[in-house]
Each structure stands twice: as C-alpha cells, then as structure tokens.
Length: 148
Image (tube, rainbow, N blue to C red; front, top):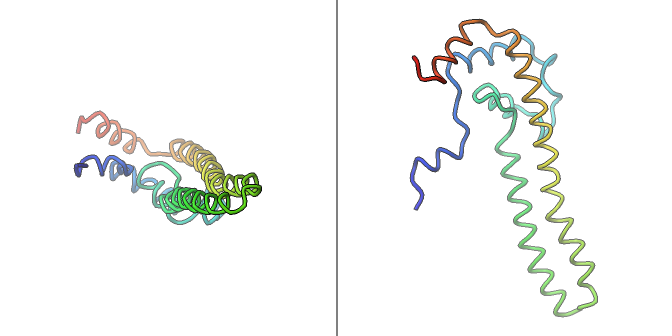
C-alpha cells in the first residue's frame, strides 16, 4: 500500500515562509500590471496562491478536471464504440473519430494550459527575483541548503 509520505510527495512543497510572504507582498504591490489576465483554467486565484507558496503558476483543480475528463471520455467512448460496432460496423470509423476528439480535446487543453503556466511561472519568477530583498535570498539559501 501507499504510505503517507508517498502521498505528500505528489503535492508541491511550500517554499520557506520568508519567500512565500515576499511573493505575496510582490503580488499585492504590483497586482494586475504583472499578473496574466484572468482565465478560468490558465490564470485564476488558485494560480496566485500556488505561485506564492511554491513559485509555480498552476492550478490543481483545472489539472485534475482535465485529466479526469479525458479518462472519463475514454471510458465512455470505448463503451459506446463497442455497442455501436456490434450493431453497425460501418460506423466504426465515425465512432473512432468521435472517441479521439473526446479524449484528445481535454489532453490538448491541458497541454496548452501547462504551456501558459510555464510561461507565467518564468515571467513572474524573473520579475520577482529582480526586485527581491537580500534577506529573502539569504533565508532561501539557508533553508534550501539546510544551513539554518
């Protein structure tokens, strides 16, 4: 079975508190001038919270939704395809196309979202670190090197 430790490895770990607070202040100071425009999947309030805690712009909710939609659509397409193929074998190519679209669309949206998340992560991190105070650098180096 899975241990509690392996379950926590799946979730992103929080960065040191000084860094999380510095990112939060950065967002509050600069707001909309630095944030990507709102988008239900690519850029929402969860993305801001995740970035402040981890330095990664993403949303677990959208990622889980798109993964589960693709998997659910794959199951539904398979079941429907088997039924149609048994009754009307000439419809197999049509059902295959529908199945590919049903499964492929959520995966494509997830890929596009990941690209947007990576772009936003890089942009925000570059802007943040260019203005970060020296004590943030020192605290992070101490924590990440386990010196402090």
